Length: 158
Image (cartoon, rainbow, N blue to C red; front, side, top):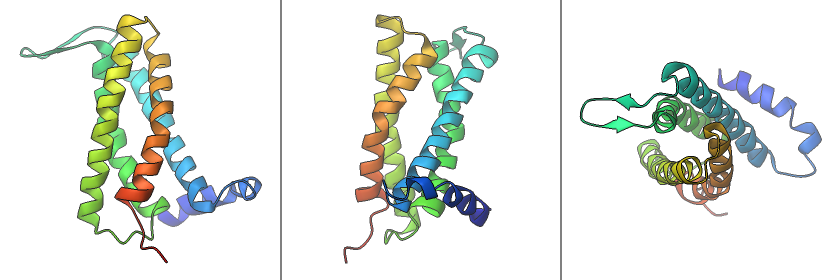
C-alpha cells in the first residue's frame, strides 16, 4: 500500500520539482488529501448524519457543526498520522510512540484552534459551516507543517 501511494504521489511531483522539495510535495499531497477527506466527512456528518440538528447526548449537547467536526476528526486523525509517518517523514529519528504522542499534541492544539474559530465564524460571524471549516483548516496548515517537521518527526541534523 505504501509503495502504491508513493508511486502515485511521486508521479504528480514532476511539474512541481522546480518549486519544492519532494518531501514538501508529499506533505502537501498527503495533507491535502486528508484535508479534503476531512472537509467531505464534515459535510456528510453535518448535512446527513446530524441533519443540521443539535446532538443531544443527555449530559452534553453539541451544535451540529461541532459534532460534525468531531466526527470527521475521529476518522482523519489516524489516517493523517499514518500518512505522515510512512509517506512524508520517513527519516525521522524519533521513536514511533513518541511520534504518535507529539502528533497527538499538535493535532489537539489544532483541534482547539479549529473548534474556537469554527464556533467564532459560524455563531458570531454567521458563516456557512463548511466555509468556516475550510477557512479554519487552511490557516492551521502552516502551523502543522512546521510543527511536524521540526518537532513531531524531526530528523538528525547533518
